[in-house]
Length: 403
Image (tube, rainbow, N blue to C red; front, side, top):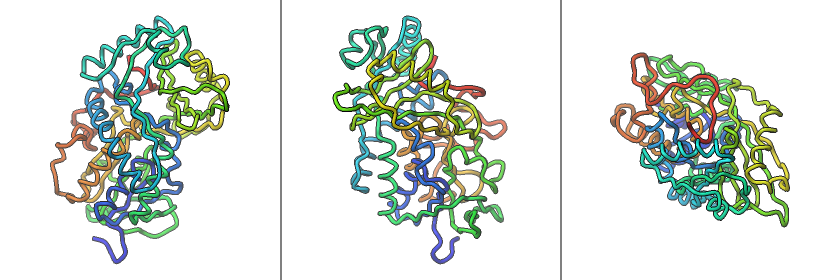
């Protein structure tokens, strides 16, 4: 299926999903080439690194919540293996998350969230205002209580991306700084990819892991084209100076119905975020959204007024019609997709890589497409007449607390 020197697999996209697949495929003895014009610098770089199967459990998305819980359990071992393979830290932290309410109406919303989480078997514990402040002393005295989410963790997403690049290089993965203009399909089978610089890179299999751009790649048959869309999010990176008190735990907050999250880093940095907008591929940063975000965050943690703004980073999350990932074989032999991870790309990276590499090793006919953790999230669920794994979403969406 491949000529001399040709890769067994071309992975299109070098975000955390594509890099995880490439690393684990190379470790399984597969010859891998990754194509991306700016590896690691898309939504994976803009993310906050939250591993939040509980906080991101939304009404009507029970199947996704179960997948996310399985994913967070894979992270400790994945982080340890990656640190050994790369010789670099990823700063995995399993110290849980506090979900706090800004006022009594927000408390009513968080109580509904708590009831939902407990009803589907997720661990969540109601806390009083004083208990929240004992757990995180920097919280404002006026907060109206909250919820302890001990199974929601975090990792430094940028450190993880850099470690993945290093581990891939050590495993023999080849990187091409180029753009895939077309997936080459002839005689009903994938043959490789065409590149913007010209020429075809032949391969026996192609994995489309290009995030929000996956749907735009030419050459994909209609049945194999993942229905993903870009959802713009903006994170702000802050830094605590000498003597400035530091947040100790990840805090997610609901303030007058708006959500925000604050993710502390080991070096005194902090990632602030929450914005999500349906604006196509526009990567501009609107002032209004940032002003609301800063205002809400300071109401929850007043000490943020002493932090310095280091960077503002927009990114495009790949959303699917039902907010679930799109992972698995397509109807074209040798063509797989791994996209649509939306709010959970960092969280789902290890499990997605396991799934895709198992399919690559098994070959086009191996394995049962209806088995495994992604059985409810196969690409063909969007075919006419197929059952959906969750409610279809259109229009604006938001992150943080559901309900």
